[in-house]
Amino acid sequence: MRYLLLLLTLGVARAQKAPAGCRVLATDADWPAPDVWKAELKGTEPIESGVKKHPNFIYEASRVEHVQRAVRFAAKHNVRLSIINSGHDFMGRQDAPSGILLSVTGMKGIRLLESFTPTVKGAEPVDVKTVTNVIKPKAGQDTAITIGAGVTATEITTAAVGSGLFALIAAHGEVSVAGGWSQGGGHSPLSSDLGLAADNVLEYKVVTADGNLTVANAVSNPDLFWALRGGGGGTFGVVVEATFRVFPLPSAVPFKFWLNTTAYDDTKSVYAPAAYFTAQAERLYAAGIQGYFFIYPNALQATLVATSFNALRMPGVLAPMLAKMKAMPGFDAKSLQTMGLPNLRGAADLIQGFFGGSPAPKAATAPPKAATTAPKAAMTVPKSPTLRRRHGPGEMMLVSPGRTAMDSRLLGAEHLADEKRLATALERAMPIKLLDGQLRVHFTTGNKVRTGGKDTSVNPAFRKALVHIVATGVGDGATIPNVDSLRELAPNTGAYLNEAWYGNPDWKKAFWGEHYDRLSQIKDKWDPGMLFYVTPGINADRMEARGARLCKAETIRASNAAPVGDNVNNYTGYKEPSTFPALWQGDGKPALQQTLAQLGGGGLMETLNALLNPKKGTSG
Ligand SMILES: Cc1cc2nc3c(=O)[nH]c(=O)nc-3n(C[C@H](O)[C@H](O)[C@H](O)COP(=O)(O)OP(=O)(O)OC[C@H]3O[C@@H](n4cnc5c(N)ncnc54)[C@H](O)[C@@H]3O)c2cc1C
Image (cartoon, rainbow, N blue to C red; front, top):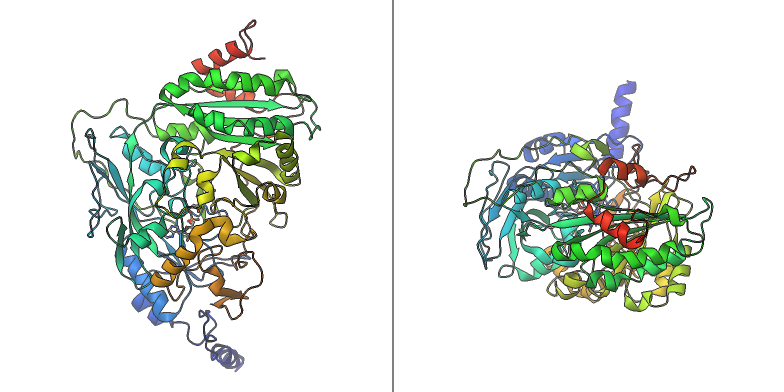
């Protein structure tokens, strides 16, 4: 009897349909019945949410038809649809508190192309059975690579290196290439030399909201092609394949330095040298030097890179800058550690040289003699049964994704000109209360980023900027870094969409600048029903979260901040040690010394040390 009552109660609760304009929830009467799921979207697995709020089901796609099935199912039954790839998004835009999570991680397959010409039909498709080929690049022809949506930075690198080629990648081996990274712009350690990821996309194949497979390139749906290159992931459809321009494998030399304050608790002195080095951006780019500069409350660290002849010039360019910084008040001249890594050829070696993020595949010693399709193993589909961020060598660290404590700003030459003002702004922006709180200065613009990508929808502020400064750290979700001081310094720039605070004021301008209105029209054309929704994202203000329910917005928002998402799970950090150097250590021994001892310096280090310390010939 009690059981019957419970059923009746549930029945009453389920008797309500979703309100008009809202997506259905599992408690609604119009939520698809189990036999409908089974018949129309077989293979969905429930997600273990625990205390967090995640979509009800995950559906793993390894083929285009799977993606089409999921998109059509979601549209037909009015079920919320989210897309997950590597799970790395700092704003947790792959997550939602209800609906289906479509995973594209299993969409593998790589093919190298000796040349690429855009056609209406699109590039030859790849899938999990595609055997990665080896090509011999021909002079005067743009070589390219077609990849499945789930291919990661390490995987594309491993495939390209076999042909003596290099594809742009994020600075971590597990970030996907065709997903949120390239669709949001995508910078790379070599972006200043080669442009942003979006600048090098030649074609996307997308399952659009109507469930059709759509080719987007220069001659087929150019509006969608433009929007996908900068408009952001999870917005215009599900990218199932992408073709990128590839480059001859560069010969690159990463270079690191570390400098800390004399007194451990001196958290005031770093800002003058930090502002000075940040303001060197234009000179660094002019010398072909790019990379990342980390400002901690009592230490400075940089990982920079230059290729070919620029690598030889790098010590000469950096030496006077480092000499000046170590002589600044509050600094321990002895703490300067420099490390030039041996010449690296493989891009994955490069990533590892930077962050130790992923295992380096064996780099090819020389390009193959002749073009061949010598069989290599087809790519395997990894199992991804739960919602997670793949991270660490071999995806060892599987953590639940979520919103990361972060805030950021793009700064141009005019904002770096007054070093005193910049130093004050940096000090105010430092998230000192966060564990590992730091400011990351990304030297990933200049040169090709400035001159290229005119036909993309990437935030125009990125093209004009010299640095993107990111305030971040590991938090509990409650403490969010605040770079208001940088917004005051640079009120008319913006922030890079993939490394930002979701609550950025004036969000449309901040993330897309003058491209927003056109992006909004294209979104209306391809997805008028907002099947694909992320916030911040194009037309995100057409929707609103009412509790766990996503509905068409009824009111025009007064706020100029992006609509607050309902993906409420906060990322609270790994249980593993950070791959970034720890803070200045109390015994006076910077953590980098250990890394230095482990990796050993390259010839570049000796050159630099000789330049810095002409008499002694050793580091200071
Ligand atoms: C360790 C680490 C290193 C990073 N390094 C860099 C870097 O060097 N340069 C840089 O620019 N950024 C970097 N990022 C930020 C990165 O660009 C974002 O995290 C990006 O969103 C990752 O995209 P993803 O598809 O791999 O991740 P996900 O979190 O799976 O997806 C991100 C967004 O894209 C959507 N999406 C994913 N796949 C598809 C698809 N196939 N079709 C449509 N939408 C899709 C998702 O719905 C979500 O909205 C880094 C992040 C981390 C955590």
